[in-house]
Length: 507
Image 1 (spheres, rainbow, N blue to C red):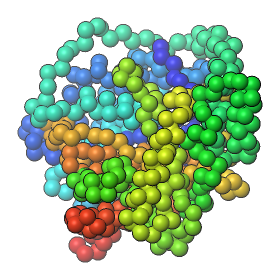
Image 2 (cartoon, rainbow, N blue to C red; image 1 turned 60 degrees about the horizontal axis):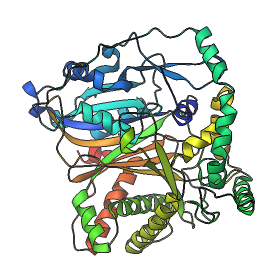
Image 3 (cartoon, helix red, strand yellow; image 1 turned 120 degrees about the horizontal axis):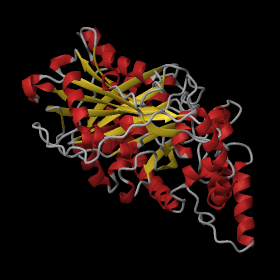
Image 4 (cartoon, rainbow, N blue to C red; image 1 turned 90 degrees about the horizontal axis):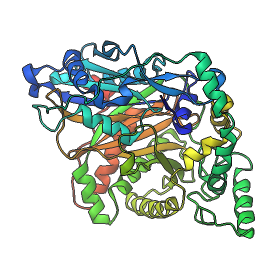
């Protein structure tokens, strides 16, 4: 058995029927390159069956410790049924991108069955031009961005002809789930260790507590961090986080926006592609990074949308940027090895070039401060909560941070995931685009995640369904922002696509 870490378990604990802890990918493939021009569940299941020994999380099933005395465990599912996890689906005619986005939104709002391994893969037919979509859904408790990329590297090939896969060197051993009595005994045995873990984490967590969403804006959190830091320094202790070098400072306050409200059970999803070559041209001309340009595009897009709604705050908005802290030695271990930066984004700056330079300066400072934080910060924070009350405490903390009586801890999530610069294939079908599907947190109703692939950036935008503003119009603003920046360097960007509503109106 393999026990979930506190950080892994947090993605389970946050689920409440409205908040969901799974992530996914919408990959559009061209089956014309596949044998017989076919990509369907039969082909994908045969490929996964051949490689299942290389995909440990695909076989993991949760086992709960009675009374939540300890965090859950993963076991090898003795009743693993590949047919349940991989299936064909189809869009109703005419199969446009709006219908595909609606399908993704419905799937994103449906929780995974915890009595089975926490993943699903649908092969969606009925797209324009004979294309086929792969729609994946995997629980964040099992994988983060980097370990999810490891799974994709097993499922996808660099050649349409596939590859030879080494058979397993050991016979797969399954086990029946342990009895409740055995799990209770295991939980009681570990019970005395929990306060010790909390005490060990104390020196690294308290100085940086006000850098951790969603607790950073809760009452007294900032004061606790500052008092602890000063007391420790007076006592002559060397802190893991230098004073004054925290990622977040008290002045980084998020304004209230239409993206900050309690999350409902339903979602909206849109997706689109921008030219990576154009982004790189802007990067070179202005002396910034690709990520600076991506962050600036997102800031400009949400600025434009909120201005149209008449709800643009005067202060800069605040975004959480997830980061991987997985070391090369930890590849293949799966689970979550993540940290984050919380940074202001210049939604208050009207000029796009000035906005890019402000974004570059902000990210430079944020990265310097991030280096001062312990890589294990998010994991260490979870050590303070006893497993018996972990789920209630997690949900309560998120609900409190989303309270309208408090300033929000952040406004949105922006994530940039590196992808392959080489063409990839699934069952022989060429992968054309790969749009990430991420999670929403209580009180943070917008997530923009981008993945690079070949010469383009693939954006996936997910929002709570009751959030003001059209997620497809937000995609249009992203295109316009890049076109505007491209004009400043004499470059070109592809024209912003029409929204699905406009396409249907114009035929």
